[in-house]
Image (cartoon, rainbow, N blue to C red):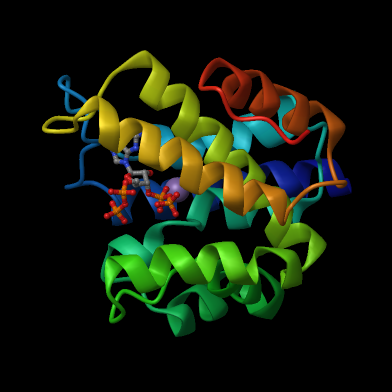
Length: 183
Ligand SMILES: Nc1nc2c(ncn2[C@@H]2O[C@H](COP(=O)(O)OP(=O)(O)O)[C@@H](OP(=O)(O)OP(=O)(O)O)[C@H]2O)c(=O)[nH]1
Ligand SMILES: [Mn+2]
């Protein structure tokens, strides 16, 4: 079998796994969009805009919120998708036993030390979420909370820069609209 065909099968297997894991979860927008739209959209930002075709990065993107937000364990990811993908999912997962403030601060602090592949997933995750915030305000979020998320994302992205011009330019457009800029 050609390697491209093998990758297509792997990507669909991975998408199916994530869809099953997120099946009962919805986004926080007023329409309660199915949660799986987010990991699929993150993977699509990576291929379509980031021009990333590395299989492990795309798999990690599809799986990136399974361990953090569902019952899925890293061992399960390892069993199904191997050590590299499991390592990437681990790198992009917050430790949910910590307080929200601690988790957010750790993301800012740790971003510069992540692997290149994990940084790519994190950039695409933030780009998706900021576009989503622009599209619809999550239920119960004030304008202040939206702005706080932009400021938080800006600080995380500061530690992820210099790796993908296309995604960084798109992020900068959104930051600029919110009065955030590097210079
Ligand atoms: N913009 C937006 N976000 C939504 C929506 N529904 C769910 N989310 C998720 O909410 C998280 C951001 O909300 P917060 O209040 O900051 O975080 P929390 O869910 O962890 O408490 C993101 O998690 P994450 O992907 O793990 O990213 P991050 O928190 O690590 O940045 C995002 O994917 C929605 O409708 N719009
Ligand atoms: Mn996410």
